[in-house]
Image (tube, rainbow, N blue to C red; front, top):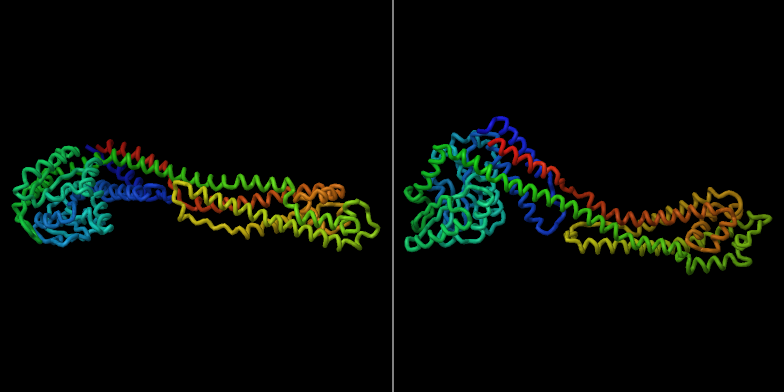
Length: 518
């Protein structure tokens, strides 16, 4: 016998498990994600609509769901059991769209606020069996996806599933596979073979019993209703008398309470397994997220090496910048004094010319940097896109916005600011031959690999400024490359990734508490 404390503890753990399931999301569309999310919803339904209500309110009736294929006669059988037309029955299929929940007035208070009352049309009638709530579910094989989903939700909430089928439909794959899966999960099941023609009674009954035995359901009750011909309403009460007596006996002997307890206990191994499977899936989501982020980071490695090699080899200064320097620093040129190292008698008179010459070289360097960096950033972006496209995760819906041009302009502008800051720290020597702006241009030219400018800067006492500008060049460009990578990483980081630890904890605590309750 369970103690009030054990039942209370189990109720608390079930509530915490439901909350944990609600908090878990699987945002990355990995293979099987639809089935995974459905399994999550099914488990939430079982815990919140079947187990928890019984723990919180001992008087909640046993939930008996009539499920099966289209046209099996579920509504007709329910109407016949109740003795009232509580659920529409028709030869036009599918008939049952909104499920019908029927229970006795004695159970009305216990069912108040129950989730099933929100998704079903509720019928409260004296004709119902006290302690047992009957549900007419939509067809499992309905062409309407909403009907199929609702039917699955109701089956997950059931304490007992009565599978209604016919001689021509009992082997239907959808309904039969759902039945065997439910039984495997530990749900108590019964089978009603409806509209069985007399000529096929022996063969069909034998074949169905064989199927049930092979599926492990050999001890599940089997009720046979002979073919009564076309009907849109209720059957003769005698035809459903055996089924009704079985349900009434269940209530009279309080077997319905044992059914609830037994089904809850039987479902716990499957619940634990599914919680652990969801926990494994949550871990896989985290691993997939890290894999995508790592793919983006790896995409930057080779382009970064290419850029550093270009700077080290002086490739940014090749072409127009080198040609301009040779022209402007030759004999008679405005920058010739930087090469010869001679102090001028009146240096200030030609500073403007030297600044202009320095600016033209620096502009060519800045343009070369922009072209090179733009190519590098595009390469990083394309490599990251390719890495994501090759992932087992469907990344087509993960939109990454990278403004390459804005990153290039920002890097060049900030490097220009860095060179000006470095120029302001240079004292004496070359600082007397050009203004701070002119020296900043020369520092950028030297940092990009122009050998002649490097020599002039070092001999002019600006070696420290040159080193700082070189470091700034690499830092600014690497920052731009990292910014591209971070755009990809941020898309993943913005997703609400699941935490597997809580699911594993609940799986262990929930099963322990069930056995403690027993």
